[in-house]
Length: 163
Image (tube, rainbow, N blue to C red):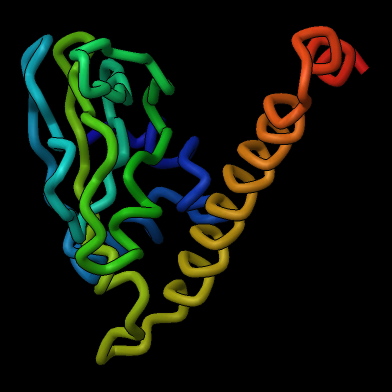
């Protein structure tokens, strides 16, 4: 498994390689390889697993009713994806996650992250804090984008963005 990607991940911020290795079984970690173009998660389906890119990269895409695909994001080694959906139980994904190249993804069970384990490992609360911090950061970034998009005219949107 790619230790550099795990150490770079916001989920494991502040943890050593040894601590991460000890945490992975508790978090229901399951690595899986995907070929370029393979669909990792499908829009319309719920997931209880968040993904952490270990190698390669993945694309987060939205397909509208006319079939137009819009690229919403890209996740590189160390990045998390689908964490908000995994934490919102049974909420269907509004996006597809597709391998942009051959990649390896570590799936983590959100329920096992959000529920204190029976051994009450000392690192569990750190993971929960890190996950909450990552979700909050992404939420703030989306709110900033909304501030620009919500402007009434193109000129106002451009001025908002440039300011």
